[in-house]
Amino acid sequence: MIYLDNSATTKPFDDVIDSYIKVATNYFGNPSSLHGIGGQAEKLLSQSRTQIASLLHVKPQEVIFTSGGSEGNNYAIKGIALQYQNRGKHIITTSIEHPSVSGACNQLTDLGFEITYLPVNENGVVSIESLKNAIREDTILVSIIHVNNEVGTIQPIEEIGKLLEKYPKIIYHVDHVQGIGKTHLDFNKAKLDLCTISGHKFNGLKGTGVLFVRHGLRIKSLIAGGDQEMQKRAGTENVAGFVALAKALRLTIEKRDDNIKHLRRLKKAIIEKLTKLNDVKIHTPEESSAPHIINFSIDGLKPEVFVHLLEEKEIYVSTTSACSSKNNEPSKTLLAMGVSEVQANSSIRISLSHQNQLEEVPILINAIENSIQKLQNVMGERNGI
Image (tube, rainbow, N blue to C red; front, side, top):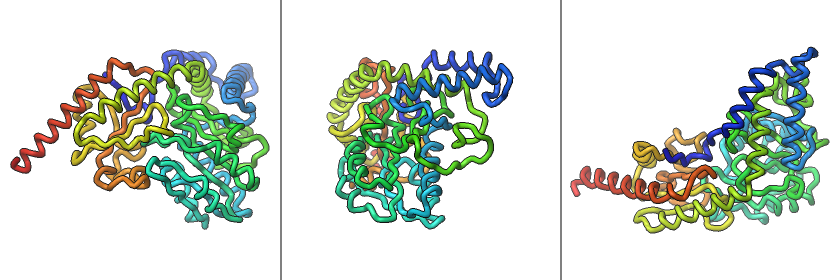
C-alpha cells in the first residue's frame, strides 16, 4: 500500500496509540473529580498542556484543548466575533480558506457581520497591499490559512503580523493545521493572537487539537457548562487523547527538519516525473509551497474515477480537501488562482508523509500513467475513435 492522502489524515504513531491505551486504561478518572483518580488524570492533563506549550514556545495557559481543526477555527472566528461585535462587525479572510473557516464566516453573515474575502494571485498567495486596503475602522478579525490544504501554498504570515501590529484593535488568527510539522511558524514572531492545530494531521489521533489563545485575549465561549479549559471550553476533557497529542507533537517537532528535507526530495522527484506526462497540469507553485502537497489536473478525466483506479493498485490519493471531496464541485481554491473550471473540476491531490519513501515514486508514476491511458482508451471507445 502507498498512502498519499496525508493532508486528509495521517497514520498515528505506534507510541501515540500506546500512550492513549495506557492512559485510557489506567488513568480514566475525570480530571475535575476531587478524589485521587481524578487528581491523577488532572496531573496528566496539566503535564500535556505544559509540554505542548513548551514545544510551541507559548505559555501553558495559552493552550486550549479542542477536538481538532474545525472546532478550533470555529471557536476562534465565532468566539472573537461575539466577544468584540460591539467594536465592529467586519472580518477579513481569504478566498482559499478551509471550509471550517469560510463556513463559520458564512454563518456570521446571518448575524450581521460583513466578510471580506481577499483574492489570491496565480500561485494562491494573498497580497499584503490588498489586506491593507481591506482594513476598515470596524475590522475586528483577520483570519488567514498558513498552508492551503489543497495546493500547499504558504501565506506570508509573518509579514501580515507585522502589518497588523499597526492595528492593535484587530485580532489575528491563523489556521496552522496543514503547516504544523511541515513548516516553521513562530507564533510570537508572527504576532499571532490565535492559532489552530489538529492532532491527526501530524500522526496523532482524530478528535484532538489545540487552539492557541494569546494570554489576556478575551474570547466568548461557544460551549456552556463547566469551568474546564480555563472557562473557555466546557466539557470533560479527553485526557488520553491529549496525552497522545502531546506525544505526537513531540515526536513530530523532534524530527521536523529531517522530515522536511525528506518531503522536499519526494515532492521534487514526483513533480519531475509528472511534468513529463502528457495532459498533466501541475497547480502547486514551485515557490512558497509546503513540502508535502502536490496538486495537478489531468485534462478531460474525472478525478473520482482516477482516484478509484489508483486505489485498485493500493495507491491512495484524493481530489480536493477531504471535507469537500464528495461535493462534486470544482475546487474554489483553483478557481481563485485563475485555473479554468475544467481543470479545477479534474484536480488530484497527492499529500506526502515522512513515512513515504523514494522507492514508491516510480511505482506511483507508472500507476498514474497506466490509469491515464486506460481512461483515455475508454473515452476513445465511447467516442468511436
